[in-house]
Image 1 (cartoon, rainbow, N blue to C red):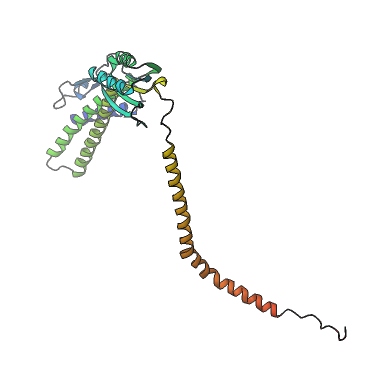
Image 2: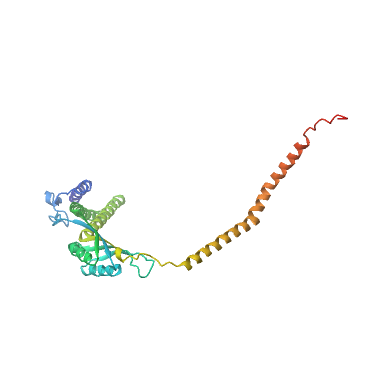
Length: 299
């Protein structure tokens, strides 16, 4: 009976926590049957589960930089070294191909930087470039989501403890009801799955708040871009034109051969009988045409 009362109260608290609106903060304490004067639950002597109070604000920070550099490859290498020095890492990097070896490529990076080093990292990155084209910053406060997830996670863990204890009691019974045992086992599995899901969400939020996301785009300085991308090569143009001419003539020859050996016989076989039938009908009607009156004698 004591175990049933404790389980009932834990289930009620978990349902209240799950049904609350997103971002709502649940009660700061869960009290078991031992605190309500109904006796102590096995293994839970005066247990009080207090939610951990989140100190400070939990904020997801994002920033973006668009830069010009005369040597984009060198700027890219400097930025990578600087980010690793402050404890961050390159989440994604793309160096776009160029048409010539001397041409500077465009570079796109997504950096994860410790939140406390974001300002200094942006200052160092801007110093590695020739010009800052654009700069943007953004922040999202997720403190309430943290508090709600931690509260729900604590309630579910307490519920899991009670369910596992109940499962052991049912197993120890001499004439244990298999259906009851299966129901309790399924409930334990469900609660465990929700705990893992909430823990994953909490870990994801923690990662986003501890490491800021910085997007950096590096393009060549306009003065460093050559006026002519490629030198003029008339010999290559003439060779390409002759190649296209030969390809065009070959295409025409291929079409004539295919038409003569494939399409024309099919047309003759399919339209020949119809043409012959039309000709015979024409000849028949032509024979039936009345002849004009004979001319008078002596005229």
